[in-house]
Image (cartoon, rainbow, N blue to C red; front, side, top):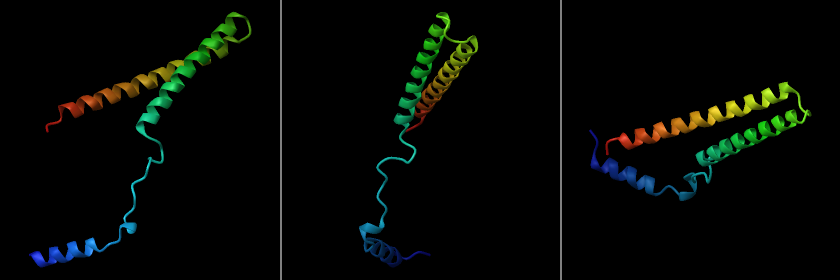
Length: 102
């Protein structure tokens, strides 16, 4: 059985711990924030779309191979599918949070 004196002694001992020994929270997570992840993902998607358009224009001008066009368009499509999948997961998580009982 716990005694009140034991609880008071534990609280007293915890109060004597210097603040310097308690680790400070990190300013930013080591891998970046979720907002940074989303921003980078959107930037990569836009850049992949631009690159595929540039390669397609070069192919129309006869300066690019058909294989390069297919690779660029495929890369843009995969990037867009990734962005859509992340967006869907974020929306589902948000809806789950909204449905949580308070």
